[in-house]
Image (tube, rainbow, N blue to C red; front, side, top):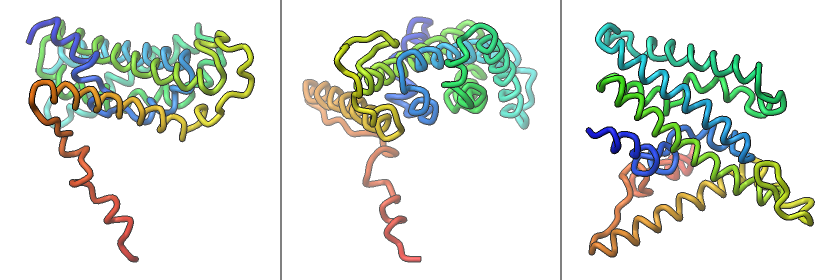
Length: 226
């Protein structure tokens, strides 16, 4: 696997949010503004890159039976470093806004998933590029969602006023339902682009089986009588 391909994969082809649909909890919770989103993304990128390198360096030493607990300990170490740095240098309001989701990077499925699926199978250099690429992809995704939500909620971007007359805005986008709406629109747009690209090649785009309603039992479960 080439270094460039490893780095670029996380930006689009294997984007952790828009393509792999991982890390939904911090994505929806911390993207209420572009500023919160970009800081959360940067923190996750640091943890991803550092933990990937360490896991790759020690992959032959860590026993298979305890590899997941060991990965979590490694990840938690870098999360603690990030948390201390942000508490020391970042604005208190920002640290408060990120809240519990900052230490919860430890169990973020993106970070743990890359340690298990990539870093434990590749050399430290490629693992570093994979961590940075995935982290930047996550950061760009969060920032895009945060920018849209912040703009519609208050008419600002990165806390700078874009529309002075926009006093109240659509407060819905500041809360969880607004996050789901914006994410849904982004995913619909990406699916449209994929369908259009497949049509140009004379093919039919089929979503992954796990995202297909035909393989989902949630509606059937909900309709069952107690």
